[in-house]
Length: 400
Image (tube, rainbow, N blue to C red):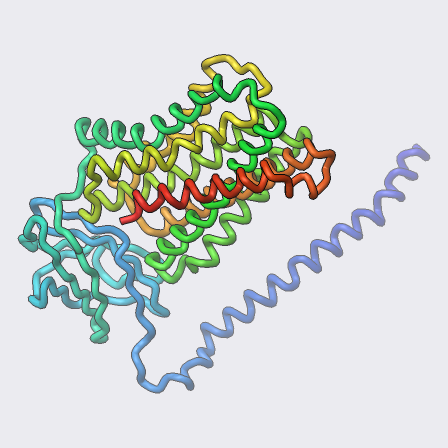
């Protein structure tokens, strides 16, 4: 009985402390709710109303062309809900149908369907007019039928995605036996080349992510979304990779493949979206350029495992991890494209690539007893230069 009294007496102050903490946690929330209620009820902003129309913003996220005409997926981004009153196509007014009907709230989406007889291969300009008279233009640079999810279309995209994503990784990994007996200088050169090509990919990925972010609705805060997503991916992967010490060997090769795979997923989204918009016609030379551009990625994956003897299926898994996402990205890009998702995917890929750069650099430093001077040797500097130069030169083949 006495022990129970003692336990209850020692727990009482702790309970009272928890209640006080809960009260101090709820107090600011109650004040915030009361302030919002007063703002809505009293409407003090009415005195600032000088008759000017509300700020309106409308972004076209997706365009679909089929035998019924054209459909646009639009997202509202204004200060208030907005109404689309008229639709012009090539300076002529057309009847349209909105789904769902009514005002488009901030952040909400709606489909605008217009029975316009578009012409294959020609450019068309769509103008959306709101009930306040504001206009928003959207250009269709090349009118082509939007791909649909047929087995033939998906198979063709998978074949192309495999050729520009998986095949070059496999070719690069096939250099593994020839590099197996590499000495310390060659190893330093290959790891430094990995850092060089990943450094180029990081800059290129950030640039592409920002380009797509600029096309997305303002509500997504494009540039901030890109840098925050990249930072979050970098920190998350760093935390995962350091759970059991610094990664090396097969673990490091897996992280390299993951970073390259996320980058290839974003690239696949962009290629698929370009096909859907009729903005890309990949010729044989361009596909060969993509393949040549990505071969060094396979060498980069092989570099950390030259001292190991992984089974053959591991090489297949690494190739699928690095190149397979290009296929998935191409499917999603051609069927369900939106610029903010491409920007987000590329930003996550950039964060993963930066994490790999840090880990590979740390691995090279460990091989030189943790000294920074080990990164200033001739093989390391030459490897970085070769990696950057090769990626830059081959990128000229695929930029259109």
